[in-house]
Amino acid sequence: MLNLAALEQASVHLNPFPFIAVPNFIAGNALEAIEKDYPAVSKPGSFPLETLRFGPGFASFMAELRQPAFRDIMGKKLGIDLAGRPATVTVRGRARERDGQIHLDSRTKLVTVLIYMNGKWEADGGRLRLLNSPSNLDDMVMEVPPARGTLLAFLNTRNAWHGHKPFDGERRVIQLNWVRDNWVVWREKTRHSLSAFVKKLNG
Image (cartoon, rainbow, N blue to C red):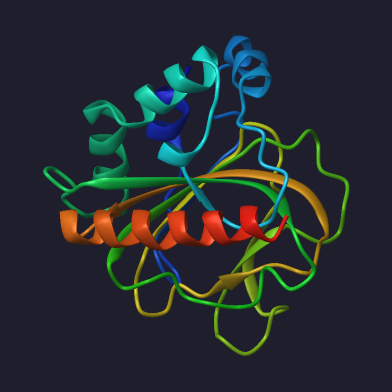
């Protein structure tokens, strides 16, 4: 399902922090199976993979993402040894107006991988911008539309600022993070699971 050859051939941008953008990262014949079996996420926010229901096509995709081949290529491209590092996976289905403000990911996350599953993406908002600074959303190095099958990955450095213009609606994205240790995995699962439970209670 993964176009690992495209990942290996992709250019690594080093400034202002290491990142890779790979259109068509998912093999064409796998897209329909993944989309068909994508979890039904009707609320905004990130949901741990373990809390969701999905079909076999999506399950196979998740299994491939966790294979050493993908991890090792990504680590080599971004200049970090990920062997032995645990990973977390969360899934989003919708964005809200207040999402996308400029931010850094948690310092416990070593690498962030985003894989988008959203048609062609015509909207102006919702396009992730990789930034030079924390104060100006227009001071960007690259803007990546969350189009179907696109991968974006970056090393989580102290200046890996990113964000996007407001968007309210369906915005499917799978986020995989290699993290420092298993304690982080437990913490992230607990935090996101509690958040998901509260959302369900609130309807």
